[in-house]
Every structure is written in C-alpha cells, then in structure tokens.
Image (tube, rainbow, N blue to C red; front, top):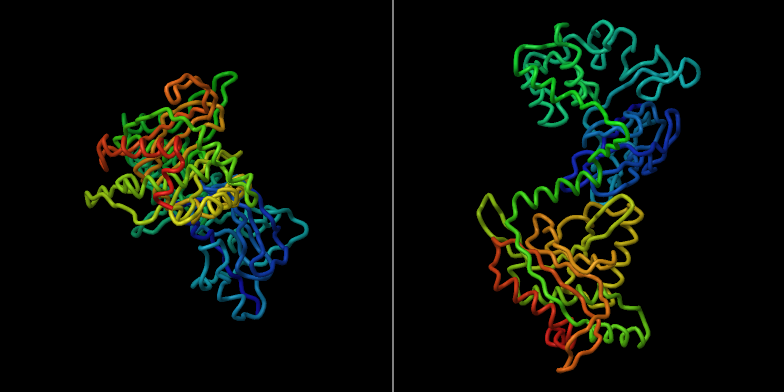
Length: 463
C-alpha cells in the first residue's frame, strides 16, 4: 500500500537556518529515485542541489522559485510503494555531512490530485478545486480551519496555548509593536508559518476589520510606518540583502560591532620570494602558486605567534587558542565573496596547499562548496592584490582574531644593499583583534611574515 512521505529542508550546517529555492528539478507526478536531486537551493554560503532520500512519485511541492524556506520546512511529498528499508529509513545523503538518518516520525497522507485538467494549485496541483495539504482549497484554510471571507486566511488559526510559529524574532517584535495578536493571524508560510509579509499585510489592511488588533494610537502608527516601504524614487535600484550578499553583510557588521580591531602594515621586497617560486616551478612537477607560499609563511608565523590563531569566547571571557591552523582565504565569485577553509594548513607543504587552493577556488566559482568547507577557519589570508590594488584595511573574519591582507606585487624603486634598485615590492596589512594581543605581538607577527617574503630561506628553520 502506498505511503506518502514528507521530505523537509535538511539541516544545511553551522549557522545556516534558511535557503532560497532557486530551481525545481522535478514536477508533481514525476517519478524520483532515492538520492535523486529534486531542487536547487541557495543558502548564505553556496548554491547546492538537494537530493531526496525517498524514491516514488512526487505528489506535492512546497514553495515557488525565489521563496525562502526555513530549515525543517516541507520541500515536497513523495508517494512510495510497499515500504522497505531503502524507502523509509532515509538515505543520509541529503547534503555532504548533513541529512536524514531515519524516516520522519510523522507520515502524512494527502488526497490524490488529478495531474491533468483542472489546473495546478499552490503545492503543484493544477486548479481552483485542487487539494492544499489534503484539504479542499475552496472555503478551507491552510491548516484545515474555516477561512476568513475574501482573505484566504482562517479567522482563528492557532489554539489558545502553545508557541506561535513565526519565521524570525523580528516578525514577533513587529506584531508586538503594532498590537497584533499573532494567535488570530494565519501564516502563509509552510504549515501556517507566519511571515513578515503576513504581519505587514495585517497592519496595513486589517486595522478596522477585526484582524487581531489589540492596541491603537502611536504604537500602531509607528509600526505601520515602519512596515510600509518608502515610495520608490525614479531610477532607483534596490538590491535585497539576502543569500550570500546578506550573509557577508551580517558577518562584516558583526565583526565591526564586536571586535576592537587595529591594523598595522609594512612594505616588503618580494623579489627573492618571486625568484624562489620561479626556481621551484622550473624544477618541474606541480606549479606552486604564490598564495600557497604565502599560506606556508602564515602557518610558520602563527606557530611563533599563536595568539593570532585564536578566538574570543565572550560568554566565558576567555581567549581560545587553536592547536591547528585552518586557513581561510577570500574568494570572489559571481555570487559574492566567500571564504573557503584549507584544513590543517600548518601540516601541508607548498604542493599540497597549491592543490587545495585550486580545488576550493573552483568549487567556490561553481557554487558547490559544502558547509564544512566554509566554516571553522582560525585565520584568514586575503590576497586583494589580484584586483590591482596596493593596500587595504582588512576586516577580521568573525570569530577569528586576525587577517593578513596582501596587495599587488609591482616594480618600485627600493634601496637594496645600499643602492637604489628596482625591486618587486608588496604591501602587507594585518588587522587583529586587540583583545587577544597587543601591538608588539601583532608587529612581531607581521615583521616575521615580511622577513620570510624578503628572505625565503628564513622558512628553512620551520620546515
């Protein structure tokens, strides 16, 4: 006997609580195999194809392309045949390192929906009389309660007790400031989840229609004023701060808000480093990248100055020094700035670092980085010289304690061995968390990096 299994948006990793549907890869009525990709979603970290752990016929989809869903919200339902270990236990391969380990405890049956004629409904059915989550669309709300006339929303959507499902604390605060009783407001999100748009709609349109308003006066006026978007200006372009761009904005803002940072910089003669790299590559084998040599220098410097390979536990008021160097590096992609992490950079040679940088950079451009490859860094190397600039003031990649910025390497007049000469000069900038160390430590770290750039033989002591 066929059973309907619900596949929910899986846990996408550390700090990722929602994802935007970019593209559906299946239609209602399609037959899917176990672990077949069914939808492409974009998180704040990367764009990934999500495979379904169940095999069967797709009976419903939740959300249109461009819709943001929270982790745990239904993605689709699949009607499977006779249950077996494969179809009911879950494959565990929803995402690399994340996913299902067992079938959901609750199985929900949905009323069969005709796939031809009648048109499609909100969840992939096709018409005005199609079922929505197993209930008739006409005259019935999304949770099976009677709909308010003309609104499509139930007059009373929630029981008298228990938590009210909202998509974020911001929505709860907006309703509180506007005097809205969330228990009398039905959400348009999955399983009745209350979205910000639901609260804003109630504030704009329901003030005099019994929509759950419990307070009036200045508070309501203030909330309504904040809810209504300002009138657009001719020629004005508004870009939503969401996805990767939004995540970058949040992280940089948090860094500036929480970390008392300071920056020091120095110019260094990189001529000998460039000669050493040329000699390595002339010897044959894998061509060593410049960023790999800089990473090797950073790892050696962090071994001497471990204070900068740390983070701050604000709740415990402790500085946490990390035993391993997980080196992040800034990578610019079409989707925005991402920071892949090279694990155990301190234990890798230049050839291994070159290969790992190349692999992660390609994955970043393709949007296929996993959450594990984007988290857990302890120090970041930012080579902004590729953009043709000499210097910059890096922003620490929270919760790390320091970032080294490297400008372009260009010929400049330089005093070398007492004489003026044209040398390959680079500017190095270090931004550090002043809570973990003082200027002497930061200066010592940066000076050691500069010495290794000017005289690569210095690194022989640590090899």
